[in-house]
Length: 602
Image 1 (tube, rainbow, N blue to C red):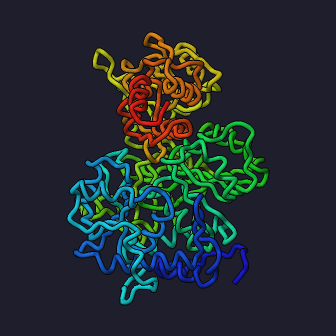
Image 2 (tube, rainbow, N blue to C red; image 1 turned 90 degrees about the vertical axis):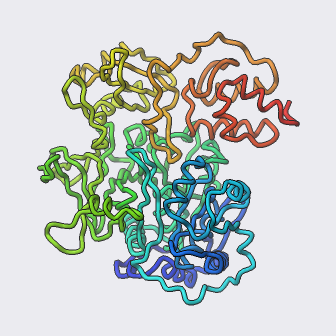
């Protein structure tokens, strides 16, 4: 079959397993590209055979009764092959970020108790020496000797678990969210039919495999005959994203908003991108302006709402003619079989244009939390009207417009109390983002020196803007009552983000601990390595100069900026520069000393 035209994903085809749907694509498009990386292109036939080898290795080596297999890979072809192989073996995959701390890794291993660990060759020695598990540890190279035929006697149904994703823990202790093959397929159906995903598409896969949002892109491609294109953000950095999008011919781009903002600069255009998906965090008016400036007239921007527990449940489509007046983008209109309810604190539904907690009602919600039946029962409520649907309260606050469009108003547990008055940070953040000076904003409470709660605004301003706290307070008074105006302001070159690209509110610095950019006496770089680092830092932080005493963290450095710095330094210096080296030596002089000790550097 050679056609590359879009065809709808029928609801009845959700009543199968992921391997079954994938096999149909192999039969239809055996020679079409399934996975495209910078170093290889893997056809559907080849991906089928490679994942069969992994599946047979998993069946042979996995011992125990948890039915879970841990996959530890950076984003790339090996991760995709491993995940597909685990599913073909009838097992449940659990993705773990190779950059996770030993404490995080140990907690997940203890919780999911894997029968087997599949790990990249570069990380295998670390895992074998860490003593994290008694399960066997295999690299992809060790699965190559197994047959490339589909494993025999694997019993798998649409109701069986497909994966466990551990939440980021931004709102509490991370927990394992379990979902089944049927629900994954239904989520793919929702994306396929709303975005017209076809075999002609090439979908980006940018964030780490342990980020649950990657599932929709991965299986949205492989279960529709399209190509999935992984990009290792941790190794390649954000600087290379623009060129990669054009070189690879990406047609559907997907990431959290902050990554989207990080690579759009200069005169570059993206003629092949027909659709941009922004999900996982708040999108705002500046994102629309970037979309309008850099992408083709026919490209569509889609802002969506989804959670690990629900999958996609709302979408808002924007084209080049759309008029957006609010600073925070709406999260839109319904998708198939996912209903939205809004509840007040008493558990009663609220009226139109009233604020309430967003709840999702559907029969396609996740199975619950791994080995936590009480938490599952408390979080996934039965439909009071009966039937198979359940209700999941997301913890997000929203407001439903008269036309059925949903507005996102922040986290329920982020509501603050200042001097006895309730304050919704999203409202303050929206006012800050409405100022032309400010690119990104986060608002939290901190105790002042008297031990009283105060609102603190963390601001990333546009490079040409140099506002003072007094100026911002004056502008905010035109939009907010005094109780909602922050009393302290912290100016950062970039707000800290998690590995998934969301604003990391837990690591926003104390106001007293935040130094001005040039708090220390300026000492000019002297050696070749110091000058190279200073030049890169000045470029990334948009500063005129950087001295030996300047500190990466004090300047506002975060994980995204670390990617940019490491990527650029690798072009000038010999050997590998790791994240730990940068974060353990944040002062420029200390980092230079570490690098100069490596042979081959100037």
